[in-house]
Structure formats: C-alpha cells, structure tokens
Image (cartoon, rainbow over all chains, first blue to last red):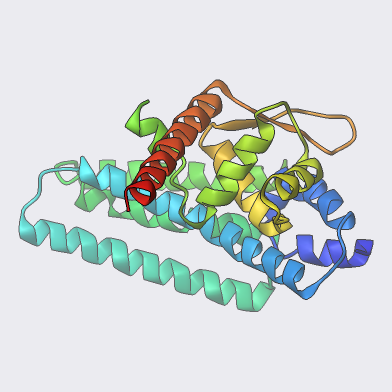
Length: 157
Length: 108
C-alpha cells in the first residue's frame, strides 16, 4: 500500500501504542496490498488498542477491590456511588475535551488517567475512612498531581 | 503440564492468533511481516496486521514474547522462557484433545 494509506491507518491507533509499535506496524502495512478486509482488520485492531488500556485498569481495580477494606453495606454503596459518579464525570469531561480539542497525545494520555483518578478520589471513602480530613486531601491531592505529572512526562518523552 | 500455563493463553478472540504467533516464533525470532508469511504457510490463512499486532501486544504484556531491538526498525520478537513453557503446555492440551476426539470417532 502507499505510504499515505499506511500513515492514515497507523494514525487510527492511540499515541501510546504508536510510540511502541507504530514504526514496525507501518513497515508491515507498506508490504501489503490495501484491501477492504485488511482495512477493516486494522480498524478493529485500532478500536481494540484504544479499549485495551481502560480494560486493564478495570481489571486491576477489580483485583484491588477483591482484597479491599471491610465495609458495611451503606459504606460500600457510598463508595460505589462516589467512584461511579467520578468515573462518569471524568468520562464526560474527556468527551468534551475530545470534541473541543480533537484527538491528540495529551487527550489520549488523560484518557488513560480517567479510571485511576476516579479510584484515587474514592480513597477517602475506602481505605482512608479513618484518616483525618487534612491527610485525605494531602494524599489524594499529591497522588493526583504525581499522576498528572507522570502523564505529561509520558507524552513529552 | 500446569493448568496455569494452559490458561495463560486464554486471550479471548486473540487466543488462536496468539497461539499461531508462539508457534511461528518457536524456531527463532521473527519480525511482523515474516510472522505473517510464516503463519500463512502454517495455517493456510494470512493474519491481518490488526489481528497480528493485537496478539503481539497481549503476548508481550503477558511476558510470553519479548521484542529485540534492531537497527532497521523491523524489531523481531522471540519467545521468552515462560512463552516456551506456555506453548508446550497448550500444544500438549491440544494433542490430548485431538487424541480423545480420534478415539471417540474410532469407537463409533
């Protein structure tokens, strides 16, 4: 296929995936004839790559929850409500950002932050229930800042 | 054969392409395009690049294969020790299944 077609297909994948596999994937595409089936296969692969990061985060969260804190029913519901609410709010913000700024490496990177950030904000209702308000704000705030800095760094490097 | 090793290759719809990749790498490192040709020769079906790299991504994350750095950007992949173990276990399970199927057919 032509370099332009290969570039367009590679561009369907998220930035983090392209950083690792983009060059070699493009070479593989260049050596193949462009057909409808091949294009559909690549599009399916791109959707899968975009979903994979979020799914792995969810699996990690499920494993954490399995060995999580001992809580009563009301506390469990409150924590679940906060986590779900935060996840929906952050997902809405992300969709708004995508619509406003279009796709880009920063938006991709922040999308990866979505579920861990929702989990962090829920910490005061889970593992940190007994901690002081100051400690909760400090731990969650500092963790969010570190996560944000690491995300920015991963895009810049 | 450890059950855990067989289950390591349970990668949903990527299980079959992943097994094909491991078999392709069993006789030495290969890059993406060489794997595509090799899998076509082995199975009679050419894997699409999206499917191949979906399987490669998962296998690398599971520690079953590793990427070798190369100067020409065609990074080859090779089996890890864990990948070799998982492949052996998976092939043994398939062999046992095939034997059981053949035996049942012969008994009819």
